[in-house]
Amino acid sequence: MNDDDASVRAEAASAYLDEEIDAGERVSVSADPDTMALVDTFARVRDALRAVEPVPESVRADALSAALAEFDVRQRIRATPATAIVLKPRWQRAYPIFRASAAAAVIAVVVFAAVNATKGSDSKSSSSATQPPAAAELPRIEAATGAAPAGTSAPAATTAAGAADSSNQRLAALVPVVNNPEDLARYAASFDLPASASSGPSTDAGATPAATELVPLPETPPATCLTSTDTFLGTISVLGSTAFAVRDNSTGIVRAVNADDCRLFFSAPLSP
Image (cartoon, rainbow, N blue to C red; front, side):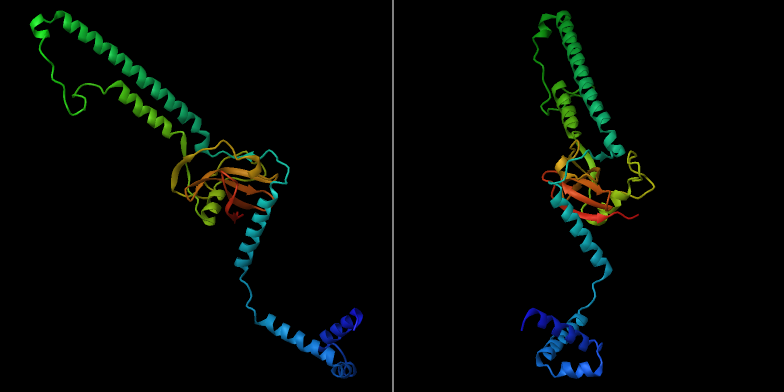
């Protein structure tokens, strides 16, 4: 039996099963054992397909979104790097001001400590010059607790070190904690994303996740983390790791990608 005969038998078996042939053709098909074997096979396949439960629409939509996001990630290396539009939230725009304030506070503390130390030294010298010799030889008892006596300032080195530690902590920024696709969708919804992408997050569009934590704050994501249709929303924290929130302008899919290796954590469709 050649391919043409097999094709003719398959068409005849399908028409027989769907009752699309007349009585004479049904008799002819019934007399051919090979064709009837195909009819039996097609009937079993049809019954098996009817027994499969339909997939919920939400599951299909999530599977398609995840597949599209994974496809975009795999294709980003081949894509031509493009200049992405960076939307900086209000807290990120204020970060340089916080850093400058911390530096000014450290300088002010060091200058204040140096002035106090100079005044203390001058006062001690003046007291030693006017005190009788016998009194100058009396030993002075210092407090053993390590705390400064009431009415006196702390040592300059300790105060300056504390201020420096506070400044170093501000090198990290408070960013939203986004640990699942629902949090990611709410975070993305807080941004005003019309045709013009120059505005920051909108306070009326939605609420970002309330929890925040200190994480290192990169300047912008590397070009390999973005495609030509991406918009960088901001830096976030995903399960304790620094990540970027990125929106694909062509599909509306928002992705959470690792800041170290651009690996996809998860994605979510942005609600209109």
